[in-house]
Length: 249
Image 1 (cartoon, helix red, strand yellow):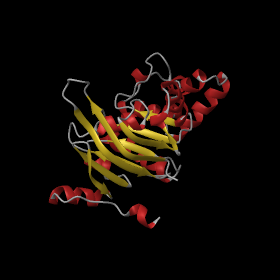
Image 2: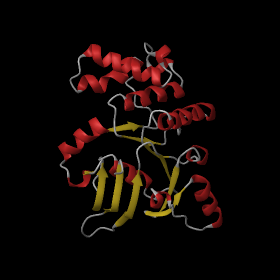
Image 3: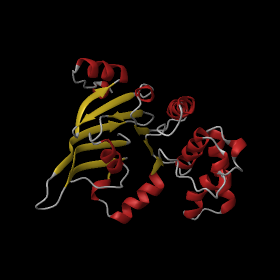
């Protein structure tokens, strides 16, 4: 079973009497445990819409979104909220750390909001900060950290609930090249060494090249799907790529 799978995913915007925008036009993806999947595409291709639907933030117009076999599309808003809190970790371009909280407090907050005793939450927070190489900054507030350090703390926060899936929206978009490489390397290590599953939207070809697989969207349609090298070659030659990864598994 896949950690994440979509079947015939469509999303339309526009009510009766309005111009209908077809943001997604039947997207089928499968993501296995321990896989890093990158999603690229030009502006308006449907990347952000797809990520929002995968995270249960939006619902599709039709189709299925299966997280560990459970269809998010059929859930109520309250049910999806629980899934987002407990089974999905989010990594944002802008970090979204609370400025008055230390690194340790930011990472522990989701646990404490979920009812975990403060002492246990802080122990789990310290464990996650060690994993991302930020133990030495546990008592520091975001304003004293570099962008790369803030993003590593944000990744620790995304991991602290031990989610089935990590969704990363332009995780290096606000970073310089050196910090971007460090964060990309961390995401790669989380997949390779810790067996996490990550779906990442990025505009950076260098970041996407580190993924196990790359999907390129255009006008809400999956244009190419395969190893990053094959997809980049196909873009240059304007030939679609279809991965045969799952046919042999």
